[in-house]
Length: 439
Image (cartoon, rainbow, N blue to C red; front, side):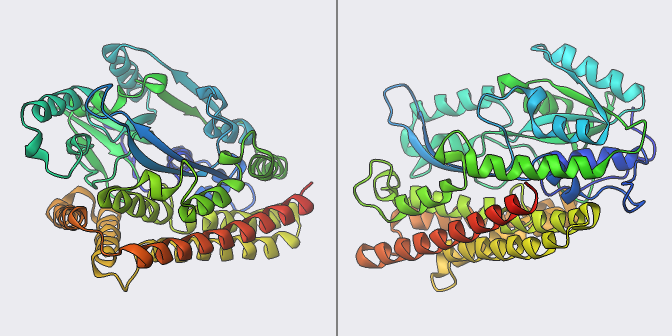
């Protein structure tokens, strides 16, 4: 069962991108252009931007092993940590444009697959959540291998040997699921047909699909079907609600780590030597600092972003919103967010700078991997593998000795923190201006 005529692929912000693609498949257009909704417009209606900074320490081999500190950043809108699936941005977007979402959950992989097939048989592409971790079972197998021979893994932490989804091979720990579309399954060929952030169709085995859908308990085996709007949506109301969600969340969120203040906090911890959660105390090993810097780059540049930490995309939304609300002032604010996006891009380049060859080469390899994947998909697996192996080789070299030491490393982090303080100041100014323009 493969949906006839399905040809909608690619996404930047995965949730808005998946919804945009399904609306396009159903022939739904935006009333203000007569063209398919843009991803930026849907993202903005759903609340647009968010912020989160965390350095969580996940447990290692067993409960006695110290946690492994990981840098985690979020740039898209979310209500809070404990939100229900029905309260997430995709539901806000749907409600505000008059669409309806049918959600099914089950703890059973068999029932989850049955739900998926039934939706496809009814002619509906299905949004589901896929974890890039392929299998918890494989994680246990890797752990057992480590325990038999710890030297086998050298400086690389055991959990990074866990396979990802077949089409995601970057060596970045990524524990959250993201939304993608299943538009077909072929049980005889043992294949599922996936629309994700590549512009090309992707395939995985049905077993891999089941594993990817079954990792995260809160959203395991979910299916979401979109019922298109039955009447023309009131975009002005939807846009205003989305803009208010954005600045209220970033300016008044329930704690600093999920407000725009998160960037100020992160900058302070980059340069502090005394704070318990300072980078100098968390990322003491060269490989941990390398991981933090490469994740910082990737999440700003291409993981659920089109560069600029989604701030550039939000600028595009505000340009559309200006016409819908007939507020020319929003065009000036759009420029402010575009400028913030440039500052974020400068920051991710500074994290892996040109004047440090190993870090520069890691950045180039990651960017090349993403560009190849977006344009060619799985057809370029060999080209993708070459970039991944290059990053892993660089990581191994850095694990032996970070290319900066002592005062050079201190000055490097000071510069990085100083640039992030500047990002914070400009982003907060843009949000304040947005609040004044759309109270």
